[in-house]
Image (cartoon, one colour):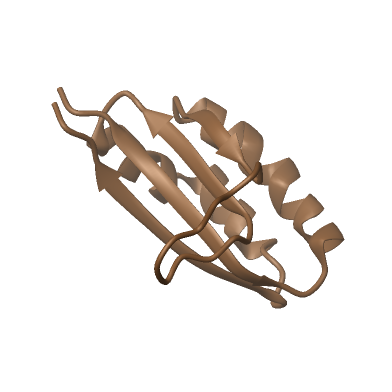
Length: 97
């Protein structure tokens, strides 16, 4: 079965400290959904049109599990805490089996 991944790129964060409330809710929601954070804001080397701002990569055992975790009540509550000053490009992708 192919794994599922959450890929989040943050082109703009007006106040990084505002992400704290979101993170405190999102972290346990992701773990409860079976997600494993592989990368969170580490170093980035961008090529072509890439951006070097914060990138987060989360792995799930399946694509379906990744979608279910996003749709969970706990994660939806975390999204409400995502600050207005944050621009985020988020997607769920299916890995290669």
